[in-house]
Length: 452
Ligand code: ADP
Ligand code: MG
Image 1 (cartoon, rainbow, N blue to C red):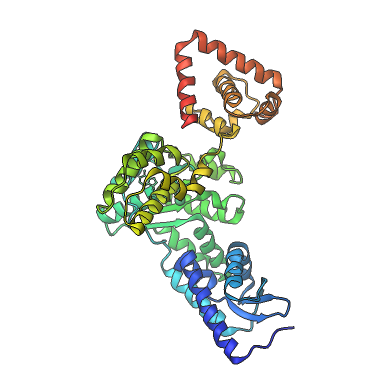
Image 2: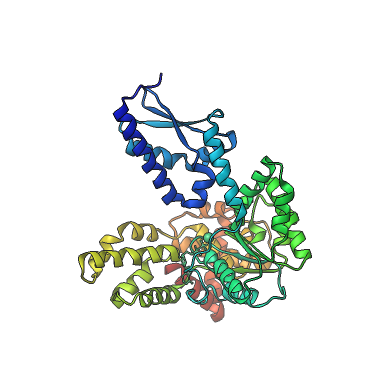
């Protein structure tokens, strides 16, 4: 079933395999590579174009199949001409490999904290309306040895600076007091460490390790949604640290109350301290982020026209904005002349297309909920109280204005309401706009933010 290879092939395959390992290391970072991928071996080539790879344990195999298989397959197809797909199996007999990967896992556990990005400091964080609360809270936590709110929970969409703020807190605390033990890690890594401690029947040292820190930061908490035993363990760690007045800082993609798949007691614990939202950057902040990043690199000049164009068009998140700028700068260095608008449009074609997408009813619901300070879930809930009913009507009205959806469709997206309810909402909003100038002003502001 497996294909015999000539010695020359053998040599070439070994080379390719090394390159694949290197690419994996680059792509996923040294920590992930050492934890999961280092023991990945070629088991054999099948005549039907399938390449069998092996890992030493069932656990590793499951993880790698779920998280990395696509990329591995892509690389294998790229490097080995005849490979059409891959399969990963467990090869317990390869002691050499398993020893190797166990060792690497142990090295890694000595250092539980993930590395901090040196660029993610307070100094490099540009503050604007959308993130000033989160920023102030982050500063407060890092300046104050006395725990004033616990936990600090930062939430918001992707690429808006949550991780940046967390790293900044860690840097700042380390600088002020190098003796304080700050541990920063993703919820995913927390889970991995926990599962590993179960596997090695070593939960005691896991508990000790996490309960002896001064500051614990867990990034992207939404990852442990639905993972009950990890949540349970996290809950205990959490309580133990709070009990010792140690600071906890958590980030998530949603507010604690909206985190589905999280146990109620944990959810309520998470909203116990200060919950700060990092909103999408508005136009002014996007501009000032671009200016800051350009100034930081003394060697580049970018036309104001281009900067404004980027700030206007790339509104989804700061990561994409940075990426766009980086691409333009790289290109202008390559061709050794400044970029004009036409070239910028070509170079950013793909990013512009994504950012050009029309507003969805969901976007509108979120924006309006945010604006009136109600929960997103209230948009679709049955609650009738005025506090939520009026914003809901506003969102229905804006949905009709900004999307091509029909009245029944809109009704359905607001918790299955009737089209007459939507009609009524639209009339009501139009009426209020006529007679109540302050209401009309709210609508104007909302329309503007949706247009940006
Ligand atoms: P998140 O964790 O919210 O997904 P990140 O913290 O990883 O987002 O931020 C994505 C990128 O955008 C990072 O390179 C970060 O430095 C940058 N960034 C985000 N917000 C700001 C800001 N206000 N000022 C400067 N850079 C920012
Ligand atoms: Mg992040």
